[in-house]
Length: 188
Image (tube, rainbow, N blue to C red):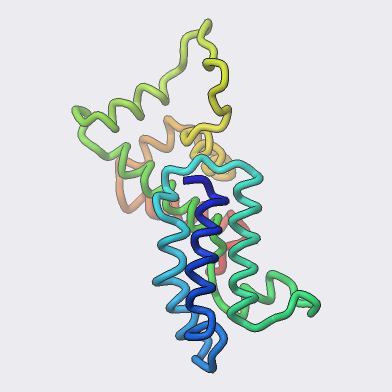
């Protein structure tokens, strides 16, 4: 499902709960819990397999900021930065959550037994492509593996190094946490 359609689905669900939850005098912590339990799972369903483009990242973060402002009852005419919204709510941005899930899936796939199909496919796609190979016409330029590679770039990791690191689960968790901190937007 396209990110636009998913956001529209979440907006319709959210509007159904408008008078019952979001616009009532329920405490902010309860509203944030409901957001984390009911809204985010619908929005980020299968997000670990998304190949994110710059436009989809912007769209996801814009919806996330809009919804948190909605919960805080902050009008858009108020001079209230997104960092202030994040500090008040303590929420991690949606793109950071997607990045974390994507790195977890990459680690899971690399630790899989070599006989399993997804492990073989991952290893085959990491190896170098033939020199004369070209992407078929009409195929998207941004693939899931290229997105993972872009996630690992701030850590100075290539895909082969990441595969070796992912073999150790606790070391890979440290890599995931470091990637989230280097993201610069995640709140510790």
